[in-house]
Image 1 (tube, rainbow, N blue to C red):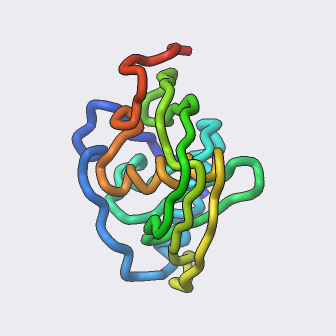
Image 2 (cartoon, rainbow, N blue to C red):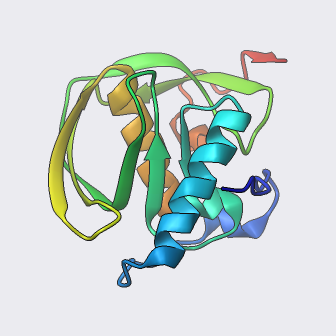
Length: 153
């Protein structure tokens, strides 16, 4: 696969809503593979297609349990609340405390179009929410609870 350039804060594409994926083909499989390679290279735990300049509803996540590929994901249930530190590959070196659900249930398609239901708690819930937000043009900065970045690395 190939590494793709990650779009950084300031690029207007990050604020656009991504389009529903309708074609489940080799082009989609290549995009997903490239996104995984790019996410791992950037040492992230999630990446949305918009972050590599593609306005499609595609997300990859790996919180250390193996890769999760989500096409057309939707949050169907959320419970509880967690306040934790959050960052983003599109905002390198920026971290802040955010408020997210503690548990979410999502439904999404895989690269072949088959629907699945997944549940995430704690870090996985945060990753699901963060990446699905990207598909709607929302950055984690919208969820900051203390109005400032904690640290810049």
